[in-house]
Length: 588
Ligand code: AGP
Image (cartoon, rainbow, N blue to C red):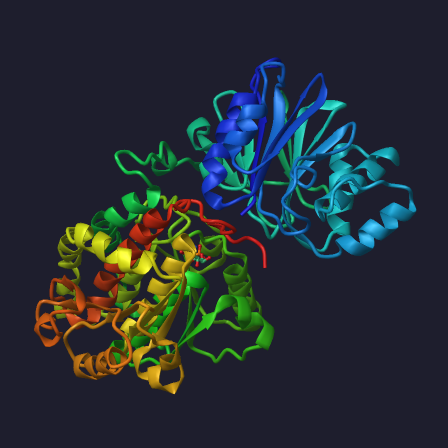
C-alpha cells in the first residue's frame, strides 16, 4: 500500500531528488497507483504523476533541485486515482505525505471549509495539511503543530511534513501505520519500511504509535510523545538482507521467489529450533491471519489438531475483533503475516492482548515488523525479502514453521521435514510441463480448484494466486462440497484443478473427479507417482514426487504457484505489481 520516503541531505545543497526517486522505486512492490515528490529548493516544488514511478521520473527535469524532500506512492482510498489526489499534498509553505485513513476527515473537512480553507483534492489527507497550517497561523512551532494535530485525528496515520520556513527539518508522526527513521553516514531518512531506506542507512529506529519525530539537518533526531516529552527509541543495525534485491536472471520477482523456495525452506528449518515446552499447559490454539497467510493457518489447524491433539481455530483477522470473541484461558494465539504490517492482523493481536492474558506468537517474514514487536514470541520465516505482491516463498516458509511446531514431538516427521527442499527442487523441474498446462487455464475466464482435507486450503490458495496475478476468476472448494452446489458451474469449458495426492483421501477425491468428468472435460489433476495410474490417459496431469502425506500441502503449492504465474504471463498481466493489490495491507 502507500509508501513513504523522506530525506534530509547531509550537507546544505545536496540534491535529494535522485535518492527520493530511488526510494520510491524500492517502495513500488508495496502496490500503488500514483506517485509524487516535493522538495524545498526555490520554494516548495512538487511533481506528481498517475501510474508508475517511471512516469514520475519522466516528468522530473534538472531544474528540480532540493536538499530536503518527501516522496510518496499512493494506493487510492479516498478519492480517485488522479494527479490532484496524489501526494505530496501541499500549500504554499507546507507539504505532507500520509499513509493510512483519517476516519473523522468528513467532520474536520466541514469545519475547515466553514473557516474558509479551500480543498484541492478529494483526499482525507488534505485535512491534515490545513490543520497544520491553521496551527502555524496560531503561532505554533512545527513540532507543536504536529502534536496538536495528532490529537485531532481519528484513524490510522503515518505522516511526514516539511515546512518551507524550517528548511532543515522534517517532522513525522505515527499512529497504527508503520514509520521508520533511518540514519545514514550523512543524510537522514524516514520511510514506511526499511526497504525504502536500505542502501543508504546504517541504523534504523522503528517509531511506535504515539511517536512524533523531529529530524534536523545539524541538530539530529529527537523523538517525542504527543505531550512533547522527549522519549528514547532504540537504534537497530540494518540487515544486509534488505540491500540490493534484484531479479537477476528472472523476468519477474514472482518466478525468482517461486524458485527460491527450496532455499527459503532449508533456511527456515535450520533457523527455527522449537522449544517443546512452548505447548505446555496449552488447551486451545487460535490462529489469526489474512489472505494467503490465513490459508497457511488453515493447514496448521489440521496439523495442530491431528498431531498435537489441541483444539484449534483459525480466524480471518479482519473479522475477528468485530464479533467480540471470547478468548479462553490457556489459549496459545498465533498470528501469521508475511509483512508483519497487516493492519487487521495487528489489530487482532491487540484485541487478544487487551482481552486476555494469553501468550501470543508471531510468524513473520520481516524482522522487527509490527506483529513481531506486538507479540511475546516470534518465529521468523527465513524466506528473504519477498518482492512479488503474490506471496509464494513466504507462504511455504510459514508452513515450515507451523509444521515444525506441529511435529515437534515426532522425530520421524521432523526428520522427513528435511527432505522437503529436495522434493521442492524436483517439483520445480516440472515448470515446462506446468507452463503447457497453464494454457488450458489462461484461455478461460474461470477456474475451479478442488481438494480434500489438508489440500482444501491449498485449493483456496491456488485459486487466490490465480485471481491475484492473472485476473481470471477462480474459486477453491472442498472437493466433497462440490455436489452441494458448485457442481452447477461445471460445463465442458471450465478448467477444474484437482489436488489429489495418494493417501487417505485419494479414493474419495477420485470419486469427485469422476463426478466432474461425467459433466465436463477440462480436468487437470495434480497427483504423485503412486496416484497417477488411477487416471484416464486423456486427463491432463502434473505428477509430483511422492511425499510424506503431512507435507503434501507444501509441495502441492508449487505447481499451483507456477500455474498462476504462467497463466498470467500468457495473459500479459503485470505480474509483480498486479492491479489494485498491495504488498503490505496497512488500512482496513
Ligand atoms: C498473498 O498473495 C496476498 N497478496 C495477500 O492475500 C496476503 O497474503 C495478505 O494480504 C496478508 O498479508 P501478510 O501475510 O503480509 O499479513
